[in-house]
Image (cartoon, rainbow over all chains, first blue to last red; front, top):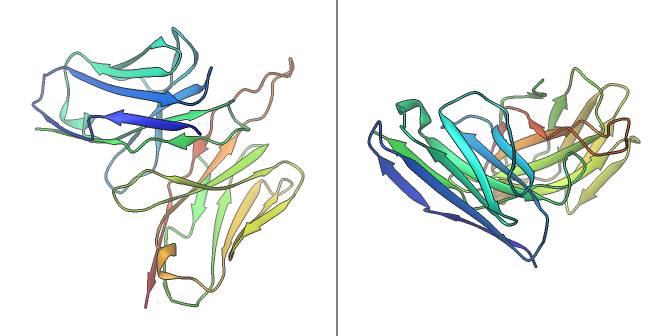
Length: 113
Length: 116
């Protein structure tokens, strides 16, 4: 069966510090991968998605970036965090795009102080 | 565009029914429903595809009306475990070359609270 991991689970970072969140998927190959951000009490905002190694599509202009160095690894990064970057970051995977179910990881709760 | 969910919040007593609606301003090819408990990741409930189908399991079912570009989630005889935020995600279908395109776009969520 497929499983998706994210780490760290929680993170508190000062403004201006760098960020690296990691997501890995097990039990499947060539997954489509997604990064979402969820502000407190809000909906799911798609940040990036990837259909293959090295292929990244950005949905929202921001100071975040994503990379996919391996088939089942997806990384979310920032060089300098802003207060507005605080939120719940969710990684998800699917076999395809719009017609396939997305399965979410446990999430990383980021607080920028 | 983001689909619109209604109502934004609903409060029920155990055993009562609820309906959550998800409407889109553009053509829908698929609708995915998720439930998220506080502090946890969204959990997939069901997917409905173009064709006006209905689906359900246990006491949760959904319908998809492609002409009206909307989907509805029906929760019957609600249980305490149904509490959470429900999201619909809409998909864009396929391009002319037959390749799936269009990511899921999620609604803003409906907060469902079930009291004893």
